[in-house]
Image (cartoon, rainbow, N blue to C red):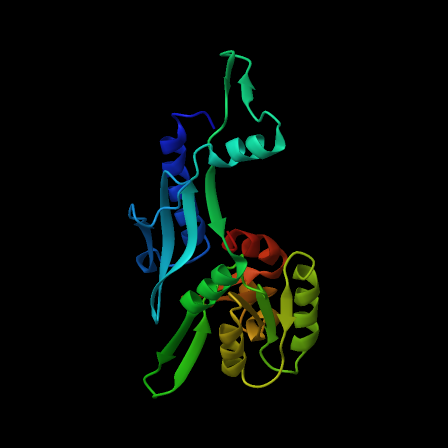
Length: 240
């Protein structure tokens, strides 16, 4: 970037990097931007901030965003003997660009997403339920498909629904145990949506519900009826 615009771009990248975490589900209340004090700054940096997360053990850095000025390119030019100037054809100016460096690590980010998503809830019955509230874009399994019971044609219908969505979303089919227990397993795995094929799907409770399925949201636990042939599009909407 052109010298003199670096502070503007530094502010831009501070905001963008903070937003990247919140857009993927990290709670903003657990994040902060901590500016480096003058005695912390690297010798090449004009300014630097750390994006920090409040872990159970305290605040810790996720990444740094540094205004490195033109230090890097000037040093490369010095030792390579190659001019690294930029020529602006409109203004006819030559200058060594300034560099803003966001520096994030995959391991720290992954740890943060897992820590922030994990939650334990004690029910009125005194039971502990565990949730991995990963953002749908990060969840390894996007949708789980369940037949309510393993009879009355439900498994066959469930397999049909499963096949209709697996080409667009990473899915898991589960027909083992009580439906509540299956929900819990997927909640712990971080699966954001569950699809259940039940007696309504078969039309046993009225023709108006035939060929519809129950779509369950992991975080709100709200359920809605969705026409089976509209399920892929509805899931696409909810993944955003």
